[in-house]
Image (cartoon, rainbow, N blue to C red; front, top):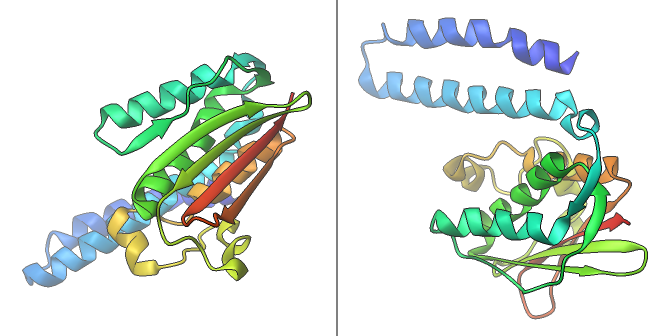
Length: 201
C-alpha cells in the first residue's frame, strides 16, 4: 500500500511543478520548487524502502571483503574521505546488491555527518563483522535506536542540506535483518560513531 501511494503521488507532484512555473514571485517560486524536490526525493526513497529489495534478490556466495573494498574504492574515487583496513577474503552467503546498498548507506552517513569513514571487516566461526567508524560528534545515547525509524532525522536542517530524508538507516537495517543479521550503532570511547553489522556465516 505504501509503495502504491508513493507511486500515485508522482502525478500530482508533476502537476504542482508545472503550476509553479506560473508563479511570478521568483523567491516564492524557488521555495516551492525546493519543497517539491524534497517531496520527490522522499517519494523515491519511500518506494525503495517499501519494495523490500533485500528479499527480492537471490542469495549467493560472495566475498564480502571484496564487496566492501569495491564500495570504499568507488566512494574514495569520488573524492570522499573513506578508507579501509586490509583484510583477507571472507566468503558469505548473502544478497550482494542489497548488502552493497546497506553498507553504502552507512558509509554515506559517516561521510556526511561524521567527516570521514573508516571501514573494517573481520570473521568469526559464526559471523561476518563489518564496522564503519566516523570522526563526528556521535549520537546521544537515547537516540541510538530511534534513528533507525523511517523518516526520523536527528537534525532536520542538517538533513535538508545534505539531501537526506531519514530512510538510509531504516533501509540498511531492513536489509541486514533480512539476512538474519544485526545492525547496531555505538558511540566510540575515542570519539565518533561506529555502525556495526554482524551477519551469520
